[in-house]
Length: 276
Ligand code: NAP
Image (cartoon, rainbow, N blue to C red; front, side, top):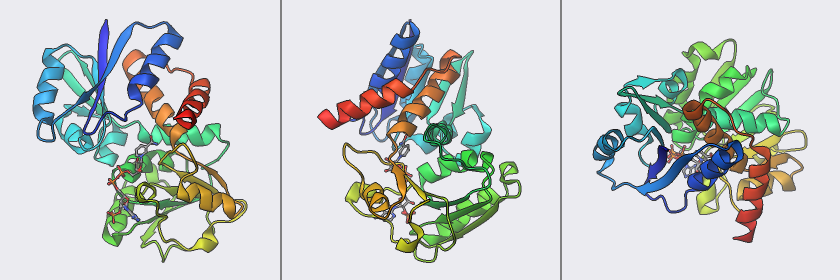
């Protein structure tokens, strides 16, 4: 039986075993998928174990995505731009690294009926998650991508990277601090971890109004502060549970060559999360 797992620290909260088992069951595929807590200094040893124990691949979560990037023998274009890997595949002695976060977001936005083509997008945050989704945002051909972050230099560095990528096309890429973000945005994506501490990045409130769609990468049983603020101002909004399922489906496709259906599982996970 082919074996996969998710590694991270902490890992107990991970929904990946639940999601991949559901995909395998729905497709009648026999595989095992477990969660492994890896000591903070233990990533290199873990990769040796993955190879020795005959695993076919693993998902990588906080705080190992950059180390996985460095450990891979081969990288996809989107992983190269992200500088981070969340999906490792081991085949024929080669460790290949990919990043499925951006594809996960793009697919969830498509499911939600939120277009990217020709639109103006504000990306809040310039950490690992923001870097992971920039390539997919650019591939959707937005007219404008503005990156705003608490540490302004990180927003600038990510904007420079995006601008110089072959995926940038004619997209107008710019950057600033949160307060200085200005324009008429169609889509505002919160890729900061501010929601974890119950905060909302301090971008101008006037940017959120009817006709704008707000997407928070974080997910929670109840509305995150960002989602709640957006809804209260008449904007459409969603959290990142759908992205979580879609990025897992993309990892599954990379490993198994078939993309699972996601709609039912998104609904079931939402209900399970609300039940606690
Ligand atoms: P990270 O690498 O630690 O980056 C955190 C980002 O948030 C940085 O831009 C940081 O700004 C900013 N930030 C932190 N606290 C803030 C605050 N109080 N106010 C304003 N900005 C703040 O984390 P990450 O890996 O990018 O993860 C970000 C979020 O995405 C997390 O909530 C994570 O759960 C979520 N995520 C979801 C999915 C999914 O599938 N749904 C996938 C990946 C990540 P500085 O640069 O100034 O430090």
